[in-house]
Image (cartoon, rainbow over all chains, first blue to last red; front, side, top):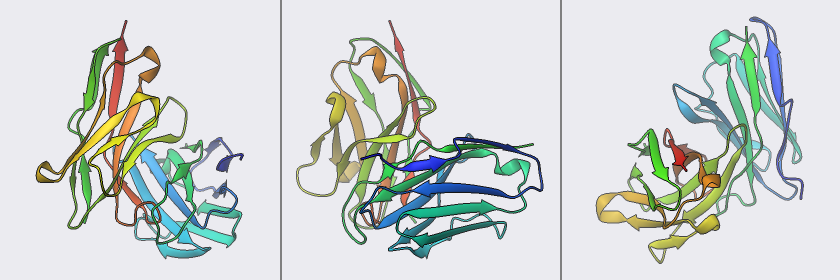
Length: 115
Length: 114
């Protein structure tokens, strides 16, 4: 299995630009999670989906952030407009079951730098 | 709301020495607890997890952790560390055991001295 795939691995953009991060979960996994990692705040859950449906988006910092999961094999996290404080590593993770007891598998992350 | 505290930001251990990384959690019900490891520039890899049953959990790479409800702790241990164990270690708690989002501690950076 290829594991969770994230693209791009690195993104450098200027303030005000739109940024789209992409994630392909492990095939057969029903739950998908987006996390953000910064030095100040550590790892924070942004949003998660079960069976392509957003379940909890309370961690999304503000309206500039949006996430979609149009099908079981693809999700996007979009920031529009981006700001320097959005600079972080963004991780996507997936797990097999919803409502069950299973491991979250993490992708390699996307390092975002907003200038 | 659940929370996780890892009181040690950095720990330095000599190669071959034993290791214990501390983790305390706050959660109203029976917690689901995890330890993940992150090598530089990499994603997180699960070391072990506790859901129920035996409070001493064995994981990969020779790690183990013990759940102590009375102390709200889930400390990670290894009897003899190797230079390759140098990494960032994260303790996490989840309500749904992996199907819901996890709450992570701030992490402990492990440095191995030769």
